[in-house]
Length: 232
Image (cartoon, rainbow, N blue to C red; front, side, top):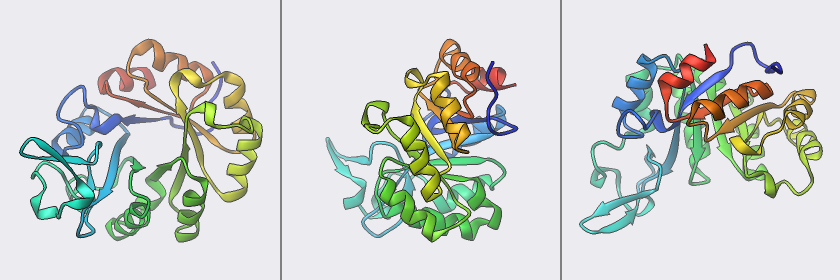
């Protein structure tokens, strides 16, 4: 087994561990933490009135017609969709939090809310995006927030070695690829440049175990008990 770059690997409960409850709800997040997850994953959007909320698709139903969250005021959203601010108030900050930034300007809002929640929350907040320019802007906003370049491998036209150098040069902490795209060589190259390797879509034991064998640093899974057991 290859070695991870960090002492304690992170197991992110994907959307709160949606195998066990309604995803991206406070109850689902709470359940994942109770089951032993040391990380949570979610998605963030901004409502029409600028409220940062946690939801995956970015759509809510108004009758039979889906409506973008960005067109909808917070007060008109279903009550089960939480604000990031309320997420921190209910759950605290004693875990790693990975947020997939769905609306570009939501990254700066997430940084501000985490900073207000607790100083240490920023160092446990992982903002994920495909665009290096946006990630670089968030680094300028905060030296403490953790940044993740989340892409499909086929989009890395320059290759892993050059991408690793680019990430290191602008202060990006990790590269996140789909589980089946990783090789041990990729992980080794990233680690040599001080970049962490994250793997998503690790929803079954075989896939997750394979990532751990490669020396991956963090995984994203719907199945929290399985993930916690293998990480342990």
